[in-house]
Length: 114
Image (cartoon, rainbow, N blue to C red; front, side, top):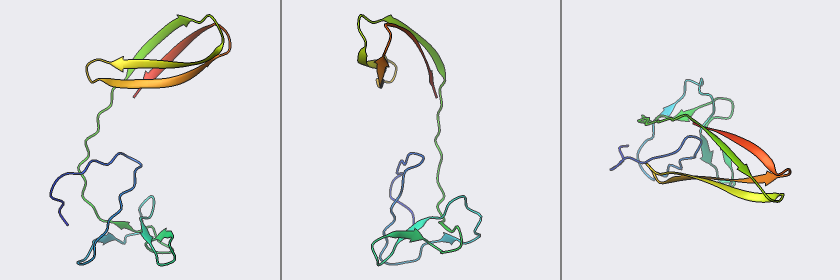
């Protein structure tokens, strides 16, 4: 099966494949880390083969980019409580947000981005 256009899927996400006719290639070597699943008639997900780790055979293009940057944030707070820390990367307009719990009024946060 060839899709008319590329489909981006993040690592760890599920792909649901629905096909009414034709054949789908299945890797039956049994050495996959995890088995792909099939929706059975009792409305639950089960392995393609009960005692094997079979998987659908897909040829995927991997586009993986990773960046690492050390950022030191030093800020004093006047009171304890929950605060939202927001960092915006101007080159990509990507925003990283995290809620921090301040229990003492002087903390140093060090973030690693991958």
